[in-house]
Length: 279
Image (cartoon, rainbow, N blue to C red):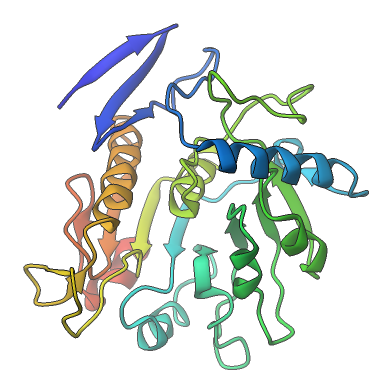
């Protein structure tokens, strides 16, 4: 484990990415990574410039939210079936959905709704995550999210400002009291937001990119499923964010996904999910 300090911040090394201790307060929030190529740099700046012009967009920083129980759900392996588990969660549990989970959400049958949909994809592929159904829960999107997505999203919308990099700031910085360390990954963004909203019990569900059948260049996992090597970076960065959350000492962190095990989250089977939040 490699940890270093800079400008009173703490960072842990995760497969080439320095993951900041987002839980540390009263510090100047700075990412010391270069997460964008030259082409991406132009894209995110363009997105922010266009998003500035969209009227009536509020910042999540201005809201007072309290979610002590949170499930972060993506559309990983067997999501179509496993979302049925979430239907019976207590109403005291908030669901933060990411990636394709909203598009695939059984909104007509699911007893439990989505509290927040978290988005930060700067590319036009972000439009693929827009639902074809009419269920649009509250969305919390990065200021760098593809403008077309934000414009087309029908439900309530809030923005968050990603933690500035040393070479990339934000048009929205003035008046922002806190940033979100997202590493261009919506699961990481959701973890940071959950912390800001006072999470005490956190479950990751279907937060993996695994699949059943072997494909070229894929690697096999211990559970028999497969994933591409590039997904290991996302896994490591998510796990590093969980490390900083776990360091708070009063947060229970669990996982019910089908990728590699997280070091900083205890895997729990289906039958343990309800008891996690009820106990």
